[in-house]
Image 1 (cartoon, rainbow, N blue to C red):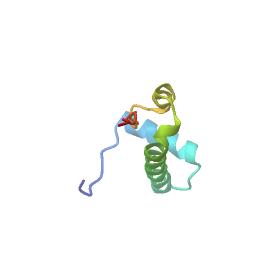
Image 2 (cartoon, rainbow, N blue to C red):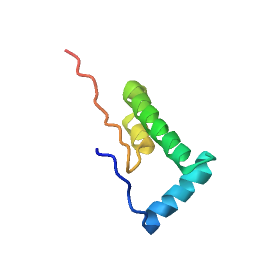
Image 3 (tube, helix red, strand yellow):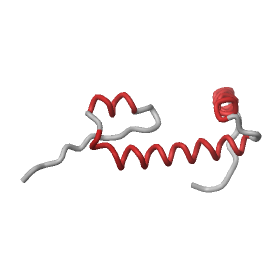
Length: 76
């Protein structure tokens, strides 16, 4: 991914406004940093602990942006 700015359309502006209020960050950059850290930590937690959840629980935790797959262990 290269470094460039994204044009603000109505949807992106709405999401950033919501992110600002949800994170209570002092700047939009801080809000984005918080969201990035949250996403990466959540993804790592789900991948590390997926065996502790049923497939249905994992489906309930999925979002359109972040999914965890269920891979049952194969016993030999």
